Length: 329
Image (cartoon, rainbow, N blue to C red; front, side, top):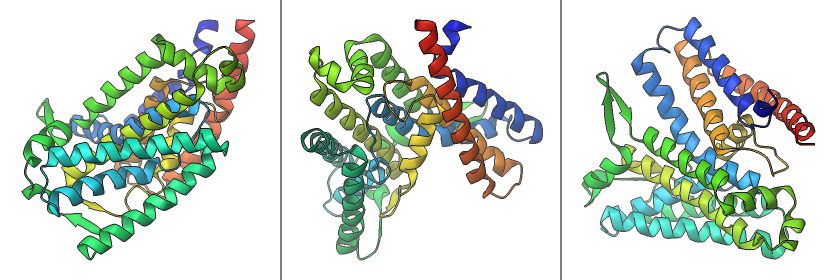
């Protein structure tokens, strides 16, 4: 029992089990293969971002530009491929470079100015939102970019980012595999590498970490770049799946990423959490969102569910952290 309470994700695992059992009982579609494919797909798109945001939160920072960044990267790819005629693969590389540059700039500004990451990334959020709307309307005359299906390289890029695979005759999106792969890599880095130890150290006590030689500036910049990479991955999946993108897409999702990470065991104060927990937090999101649809309830109830889950997660996480600290003593 004492070993279990040290795990940040234990509360999320219990929550996921409760949500799974509840919707399995009240709806028939939830447990079907088709139903599972739907809520796993919903959870995967949120989960990729939630895992990256969790790493950043464990390191003691927030990124409010994460949601709008998914649209920015998709727009860069779409504009380059449809307006300039670039091969989709080359457009994807350029949008990746763009995302990493924005992530590095966010991290550098936070560390050099000493301003809270909440303020710096709020500025990035507004700037990217304005760029998305302004440039898209200037180039296309609307707030939408479409026509990706006719771009060179679309088929091969779509196979990697937006194809499906069959399980029992039902199609599952490949984004689920990306989600699992991203979670495994993030968890391995966090729990089994020196960089992972640095993330926990700088999130718990940045000044003390710097005093013992931890490269705080470089580590935090890399964490912001990791969040930007995840946003590029989600943006790429979106643009290749739907072949079009709206300039205002992704706004507001940043709070869902943070909520999923908190439900998964991350503390808002940093220094505590896990990548697996954030992935489970996203799974709870996906199951609840689709479960409410299958149950035929008004989707407005989802916001109530989110509020209750967030408060419950914060209370459980604080309780588990205090218990874990007592066990360590």
